[in-house]
Image (cartoon, rainbow, N blue to C red; front, side, top):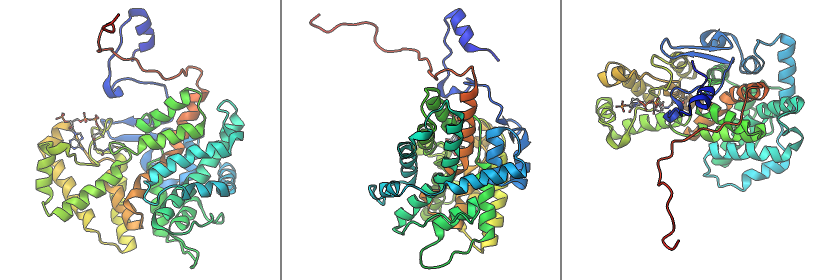
Length: 399
Ligand code: ACO
């Protein structure tokens, strides 16, 4: 690889790289991907091992600090997070100022941005203690904000966090519990959600993580950077794809056009229609996360006793696409978003919450990258170049 900034200085040449297909913006020791082989590792550990052996918070620690936590470290981390779950009562009023039709991703991003106004004591990016506190606050409060966005959208009362519960169980109760009845956590749901969150925890320099780094490179605080990352994630070409996949499957079912006809439309690029949940900038092989998610989909639906025709449509679509030359030539395989929506739906989440679940999962990765960037003495403000193609100098008619 070449250090382009030195080359640019020496030669005056600028590399034009739409979509940063071949431009590394940083060195990083967090996540390794081999897109040709379909390999993903967090801090060196294969994703399959991580998903089978850890909990979400344990992986968060691994990503942020580089090593698996000891039992004491994990216990202390978990305790601190439980301690910070409450939202300021004034911040709860913020939700009533938004329409109940608001997309939960917009609510999430706005509320995270608003957090910085309540916690000015932890907005200095150069104070390690403040950064630690912000990371704990974000991990503790993001699921609560997400659940309140959900409750608001369905017109139900907000519940207070139950700190006797684990991270995931607390989140499930905040979403699916109510004031009138005791809440029983379903272990099938809890285990499956924990695993899905782990699979989303990091994916190196994707669009939202690069956004978090870029915003952070200006010296902006962690709340601002994460808020921007959430917005970047919301797009249908990125995290928003999990929501788009379910909409696509629903349309195929409702229109009765059948998988074959739909794939034909995709291949003809009719109205720009894409096979959502397929293709990836880095993976030119099966996304290793999709393999695990697909297996989970079968297990979870069976465990919850749910039969969803959308899962059958998804499988048929996958089979069909994998045998088709259009997808073979372009090396398009299912990505992590292809099967997640079917599971979230079976769990009882509305479609518009799907990308919010992705954001909760991705939070540790964003923070690990933000912290790595801040600690790296080579970090500079992110500032891409352009090749100017507009008018050369010209003047107002009267001059
Ligand atoms: N359906 C149909 N055709 C596709 C798809 C798809 N899902 N993905 C790529 N292609 C085609 C493109 O049209 C292009 O065809 P062409 O050579 O005839 O012009 C070719 O494959 C290469 O695709 P690019 O768009 O150049 O690939 P890029 O790396 O820029 O995009 C992306 C990657 C955005 C993920 C793309 O595959 C896509 O739009 N997929 C659907 C949305 C999606 O699932 N996003 C989630 C990604 S994973 C994540 O963010 C968590």
